Image 1 (cartoon, rainbow, N blue to C red):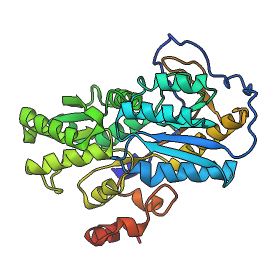
Image 2 (image 1 turned 120 degrees about the vertical axis):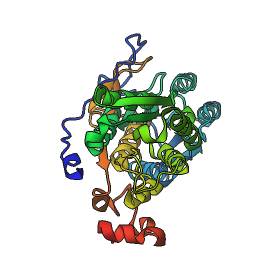
Image 3 (image 1 turned 120 degrees about the horizontal axis):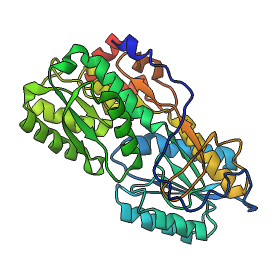
Image 4 (image 1 turned 90 degrees about the horizontal axis):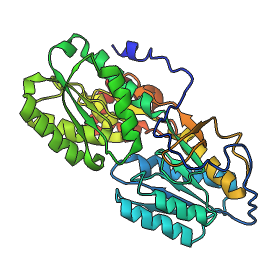
Amino acid sequence: MHAALRGIVFGTVTLSLALTTAACGSADQADGKDSGKEKKGPLTIGLLLPENQTARYERFDKPLLEKKIKELAGKDTKILYSNAKQDANLQQQQAETMVTKKVDALIVDAVDAKSIASSVKKADDADIPVVAYDRLAEGPIKAYTSVDNPRVGKIQATSLLKELGDKADDGKIVMMNGSVTDPNAKMYKEGAHSVLDGKVKIGKEYDTKEWKPENANGNMKGALSSLGKKNIVGVYSANDGMAGGIITALKGAGFTKDNMPPVTGQDAELNAVQRILSGEQFMSVYKPYVPETSAAAEFAVALAKGEKLDDIATSKTDSASQKDIPTKIVTPLPLTKDDIKKYVGKSGFFTAKEICTNKFQKACDEAGIK
């Protein structure tokens, strides 16, 4: 089963974002022209991340971004950081504070891709280039980096179908998608549907408010009540945090790790890795944070210095308000129990010591993790 999963072939990464054709303008750097901006002295780079419920942002994204920025721009580079804690209004205030402080470039992972557009415009008006990180924010964005988001959904759905096998005909699955304010959630959802539709019956489907585990938990309880425990053969969960809430609801309904329907995830969070090892969660998606954070840092430093982006960008992307945004996309990878061993200790993943606490030592031993 897992051997077949690992046989998934990842070809040349392409990004297809048909968000709209009503674009109004193009990124300054799209044609390889520099901005003419020259910066002397230490740079100040602003960094805005969306929330701290998902462990990845504080554990990996922030330190990796800070490290790479200073490698590129020097140890005296000043990095101003704020986390919006899933509050779109707070993030707008944080962005405007960055404008007031006259940062040389701003990296934004948007809570709400649409509502941040006005703040991006204010930054642009102040000659502060904005890099959209992980999620494609609207407004005059100068560069964008993320993982191949439709492929994430395809990996999750393909993994789920392979694990279900003939059971796909015996019942229904529940789809727990992410927040409608996150453009990535739409792409995960579309990618998953492209694989699942016609192959398995979808009993219930939810767009989970704010990606919150407690909201996923409530949705899953509703699905159990509506569909009946015996009729649910699997759960598509768009990320690991929600998978935790879903699994709690399934346990409450009487499922154990021995008869738990397969539950997908994303982000390879520590709790999820441990759940996968113990058999509670089926799989996650590992998104290599190092190349993604490196691209964001490279874009931000180059833009702050007024340099071209030709050597960084590998493609271009259109948003609802901007055309030809210089882009770099990273390939995501499936993470099942059999895959964990090869990532342990690598940059952007957890150490054996972090994973193999007393509770999970036996599972680690069985998986060959030392």
